[in-house]
Length: 127
Ligand SMILES: [Zn+2]
Image (tube, rainbow, N blue to C red; front, side):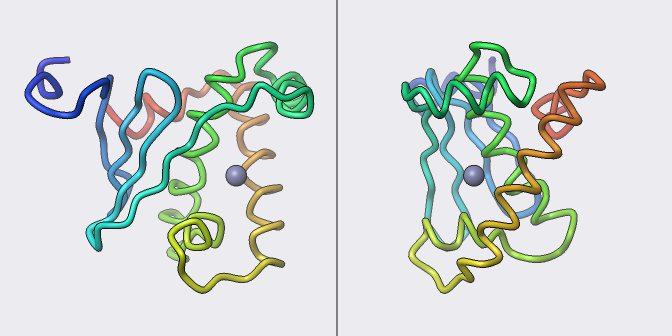
């Protein structure tokens, strides 16, 4: 894409969800915030990750599972007006383990629903 050609090696697409800047990389994502913190998300080649992909409508596409998962963490936080506890933990900030677990389940549930109804979260937030 033209707007990404001048910077960011390997950045395929860049868009904002609230204050979070989401970059789609060759594999996975990099999400950054105005305070300079960033979280890189990459698919895992583990059996449990593949099982998560199959269970939530991604078939064998662990790469797409990863991308949409990271996007939905920040999208849910933006929608609810409450910081992503999972992202905050990864950014070295205070967060609740109990809320992290609830957030993981919520994000995966939304992903399964989006897959079932054919909504592409990247398209939803980047266009
Ligand atoms: Zn997660």
